[in-house]
Image 1: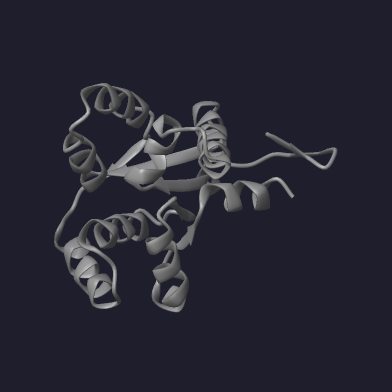
Image 2: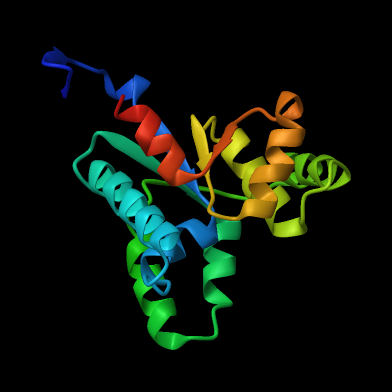
Length: 163
């Protein structure tokens, strides 16, 4: 159930909003919060995770997300992000389909990990791929017509969802 604008909306789990976070996005709550933008993005990520925890939205993770988390050199951050990532309800495995799509995305200008993340989000039919990486967001905007998932900053997306 969702209450929006004084109206109660019932939703069905099959139509639940599916969210894919990239690694920089789930790291945001653990970044230096002295910058206003970082703090607001962190609050947006935590708000989204709250909706995931309550069962309103679904978090889609992936094998590439887990691999990237494991490469974190800061053990304290690694521990925190791993704990956070345990809330992902679905983990997309990287198979030939995702690798091939990632190669196509690299030709569009995406970095290797970014391409794999997007390919996994597309494969899971995520409604939105969230990132705080400005370079990735700009590239996604440039080639949005060739993407099969919406790519947004978490703060921008949450503001839109709350309208």
